[in-house]
Image (cartoon, rainbow, N blue to C red):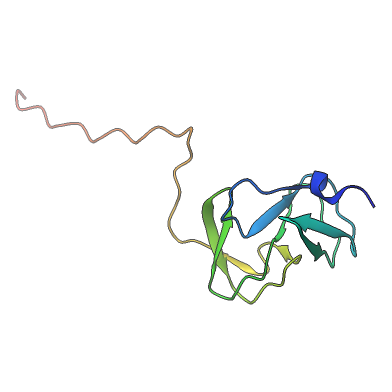
Length: 110
């Protein structure tokens, strides 16, 4: 088994998910903050998994930002994806998006 800490990314201390930056095979154990977490299914690069137990209704926090809510209880190590997460209803502005232009004022000279 490869070094588990080199296979995951967890940026913010409050994140309750981590991201696989290398494939993690079913049955592998990864370490997050010194805790060993078994991963029950294979995770491809870029996929999220629970860094700790997440309760149904709890916010899913990735890179310091809430990205959705758990639909069910999610165990530590479990894949976190559309099957167990509801997206937040509020649209999020991307950092590279400019604010919309305000509507033009009517021209009184007409």
